[in-house]
Image (cartoon, rainbow, N blue to C red):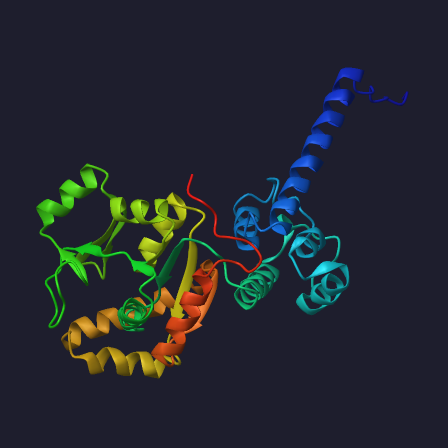
Length: 309
């Protein structure tokens, strides 16, 4: 039986393929340059690579990505790759689950240690009773340059909570209206009961002024903000231990036994979301946890905060 030969692609296809390859190389070079000059956070590039493995960011070799980060360079890249147990041939989009976790954690730690993200919008989330509100309140008192977003909620005020300072307390009809008119950046039903949401207007106005904005919200809300504003930095607040989380929930005395049990079951699910976040901060001591969150919002050293567009 005679051998069948595959026809060579026409010249026009080869030309088109060559042009596409050149365009892809230029696009990857632009991403590397953006990392190097600080106009794009390495965390943002890493997120894009994980979301679209075959996109421009996903096609970057891990070595290219790391060596583009200021203060790393070629020699450190080789050592880091060995520490992370990642082959030099690997691309960002082709990493396995554990490799993704390792490089995400390394990048988050590196960014935090070398001047923060410089991002204007940081989302603080974590499991129930971890102390998000306490950390946010400490930031409000001690770091007036950080603007805290005030959420709207359909639940009743707890003792000591002030309208417009801790929350905007609204009924279900008003919350429905805010959703219908697009006034909420994100919203979610929490613990299968009350609804919480972030008013869009104040956040956008603060960012336009060049202010840093901190959103203290639940994990569902953090996911919604990531979809709406991919440039946001997500920080997961962790308890020192599970036993301490239980102690805090029971000790605050704001829920009955049935509600406490429901929230603890929810907390187990919420803790599993930690790998979706850019940074982890353990809330062992409130002042230290608050400092770490604020440090992430400081402009990256060596360049000014980006101007409003």
